[in-house]
Image (tube, rainbow, N blue to C red; front, top):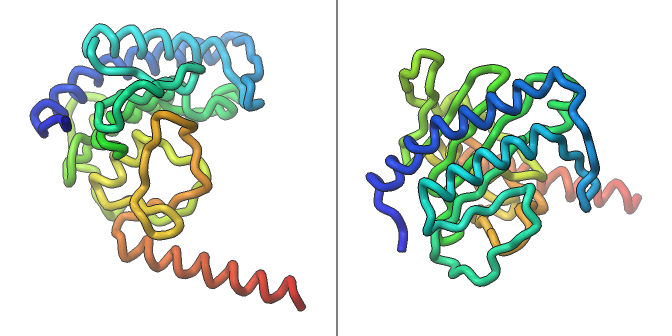
Length: 229
């Protein structure tokens, strides 16, 4: 059963201080000599990833005890859950490689996934003190340092292909415009398996995404023909 708009908004507002706490905790560890190890897939993980994960998981379970929580840092997969059951998907530190290098290009992400779609999302970039969130169509916002919210202007969004879609980013972009897979179909979140897809298109409008898809296909055709010559 899907949550209504009011419940979704309450969930997001309850998670705003949580995601800020997790992001600030990670940021505080950036100047330290954080220990780095490799995960099974070869990607790096640090003590900041784990600290943020602990804060997010504990808070999500405390605030929403009946809702499963799926984290990038957890090996568990909720195979027993129903597809229609809401689930929270968290990425404790998106951009670990940039974090390790001392850059400010990293964030903490939380998404609400319902019926295979990201219906709400939060992204907090602590080094830049920028927080974006959404909880429905046309309801995408940025919270400023003073706590005020403003709408995310759709014209700020461009169109670009990517190989690593993020559920929280999908929710925010869809609220402000749209997200399509490279074959033109809607992007689906499968929380029973990996959170990686073979690619997707993010654009501020579906027509813009369609034009980019057409361009990519034309380039692929041209490259294939050139390779045969």
